[in-house]
Image 1: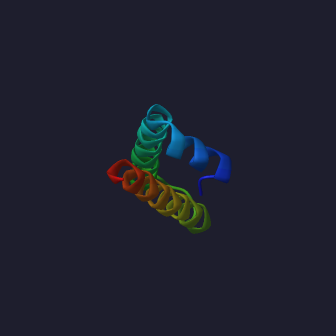
Image 2: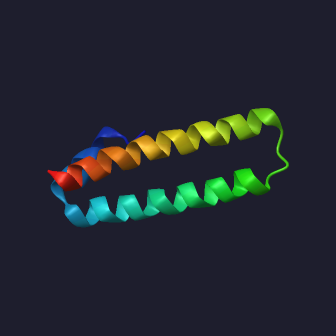
Length: 68
């Protein structure tokens, strides 16, 4: 999840918000690639999938800020 300080900065500065969106999109893409190519154990894959889900939620919050 996005910490409160980062969230406030994203609310106040569109450039910071866009940078955070770009970073989250990249992290999600890379994580999904790792998951699809992975030979990790089930526990590690579950952890990574949860992190991807959290990142997607953060991304949605940032997208909603753009719409306001």
